[in-house]
Length: 152
Image (cartoon, rainbow, N blue to C red; front, side):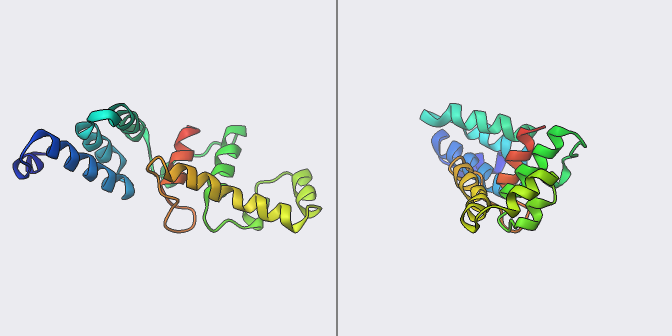
């Protein structure tokens, strides 16, 4: 932040630089540092939205670091992560389904299965509008982190 202060001419420029740096760190999944820069850069009409995002980022962990419980909540977390995976497959989904759910899937039409597999894309798209990307490769990304952290 000291370097940003030296390089900017006024308070508005400083806040803009800090918020943009925070967004870059968020995309790099460096959540605590991103939170601090975004909070420092919060200003104007979006200040409360930026502060809320910074508050969430302070608690966020990359989904790989989250300990998923062997409980109903853990199953929901796993399902959310699988749903958000850009490389989702029927096999990945079926791995956590009950026998009854697997039977239903086997008897579903190809169109219904395709809609189910595409549901994660809708969620990733909605999350991307809040600043989270849909992930860079299978099983990773900000949308997965946001979803998994929401269930902690």
